[in-house]
Amino acid sequence: MRYFSKMRHALLFYFFANILPCLCQAQNAIDTDSLSFEQQRQRVNTLLDERSYRFGELDISFQQKTGVFGIFKTKKDMQKSIDILKQIVLTDNNIFLETKKLLDIKDNESTRNESLAKEYDAQVTAYMKTISKLQMENEKLRTQIKELDQQDHSNNLFLYLLGLIIIGLITVIFILYRKHNHKI
Image (tube, rainbow, N blue to C red):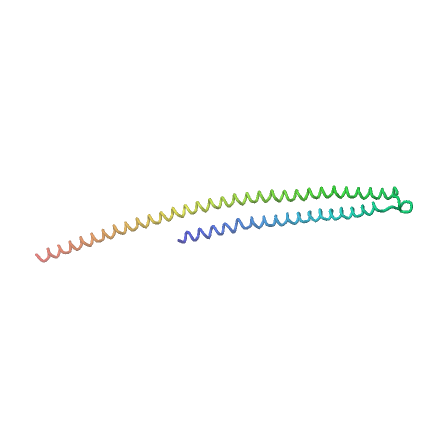
């Protein structure tokens, strides 16, 4: 019985020594990835806010008319609108680049999660095989213990019979000896 208790303690120790550190490392990596994902998401949101601001400037620029009596647009007004449009295009390009980085982070995180899931699945499968093997060995040992108990019981029975025969023989010898001594 102590053997099984020791085996159980060994399995628990193995679990805590090998699996828990892996889980903690995985959690730290996930936290780091989540942090970089969040930072990248905020960059994209900042660029989107900047783009919205520039469209507001563009709308104001389209409405400005500094020509004769404020009726016509001047070349300077149009150039200002064109410059704002260039800024919007540059901001859009930055948004696309940062969004691509954001998607790459998300893809890397998904790939890493898949590989971690496969690794944990392999570990769990290996642990299940080990547990099955230990259970089979445990059952085998229990069967051996039962067989040894039965052998021990049959050996004890044989010894008891042998003891009774010896006691019987001694008694018969003693009785014959007494009868023989009484006759003399």
